[in-house]
Image 1: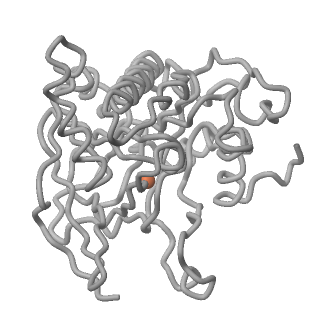
Image 2: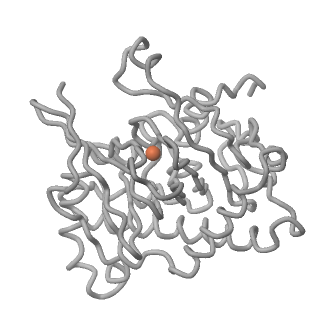
Length: 313
Ligand SMILES: [Fe+2]
């Protein structure tokens, strides 16, 4: 199929997040509905406190600028938290294995932050692999403000995702009304990602959970619209004070809408690396979609992407 890249989206799915939380909520819902059903994502104005976003950028920039041997002290392992030096190969969807083998590896590094206070609930999910272990945080001597700022940012992102799910449920034409039952703000990790100025990238994929919230500082995120004739990739604009919300696979399964398919390609004339603060809404830790626990799906996808699971369950 022919592929082309366009700069301008067919329309801007701009939602005023603060109005969603106000008595004027209803006025924002048509954009929520149109954005998710036609593009699979929203641009949320005034979502997370801009001071907190700025501070979180600064802390992650400081972390990523540390020498590699220092960052590797905090490397993530089978328990899925800490520094990710970028060894993963994302599971490719709708590709033959030969096509997937030809794709370049993602070029990015990241860091995973989980809510440290969460407990396991269901007996059927191997929770020891997700919860109950400390984050691998840099020490106070190394980065004094890192822990409180990044935990506050993760919590703000998780709460915002819950509010969006509530709003989607208020759009009866696109939701059966039970997305909010999958809200579990403690089961939403934050994953800051750094794409290098020199060819940073992420291959085309859909996110696994209900929804993803992103604050970023440099263009490069692209979203696809597919017609019979062509696969058209659109640049997702980076707008001051605006977060991106992407519809994920679990929410797509619940609603029947499509999950947002996206990739990252750094602009050729980029003037710096791209930092994205990404919070993943992973569904509810104790709920199933169909006959599969949300948490089990997340564990399986981690294992496919990172080769984990070799430590047994
Ligand atoms: Fe993604």
